[in-house]
Image 1 (tube, one colour):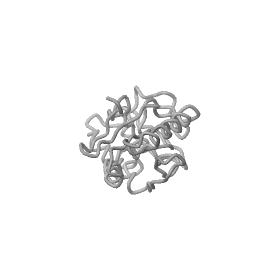
Image 2 (image 1 turned 90 degrees about the horizontal axis):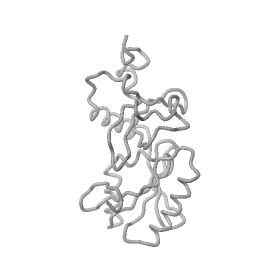
Image 3 (image 1 turned 30 degrees about the vertical axis):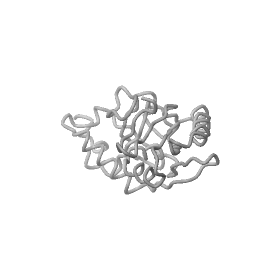
Image 4 (image 1 turned 120 degrees about the horizontal axis):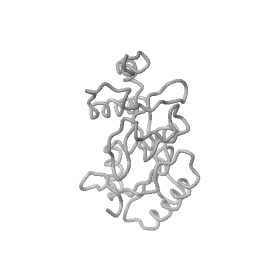
Length: 192
């Protein structure tokens, strides 16, 4: 029996509990199998050197990263991504908060904040409301910060805050910054 045929991994049994996670490398305090396994994880390229991996919610706050051998060979990765995003929209509420330095943050459940970067409409609404491009940081899975690109002092404060979060985080993602272009409606590596 192939792993994806096992009841525990059968797609129809887990499809409603799959979520997209943004990762540079897998090392996560909520993951059952998260000891640097990115090379075996089912993943799609995202932006820069980040990937989207797929996590299945198991018991409590425990998740299991979907590995290549857990998916049938004919799995449509784009469809899997859309299913995972739909589950995230259904199960997690994202709220915009203010930071002390004038930037903004994404607040969710302490596990899925970084997954907010998957949703172009969140960034488009924020960019339209602020009438500016957005500089975005996701130093760890529970911290996403953003600021209007034209507000240099606010961006500098956000970058300092984000770097401190990255340096002290257990579940790091990246210390890179990203730009969401209001006009082009896309997320790119900042400065690229």
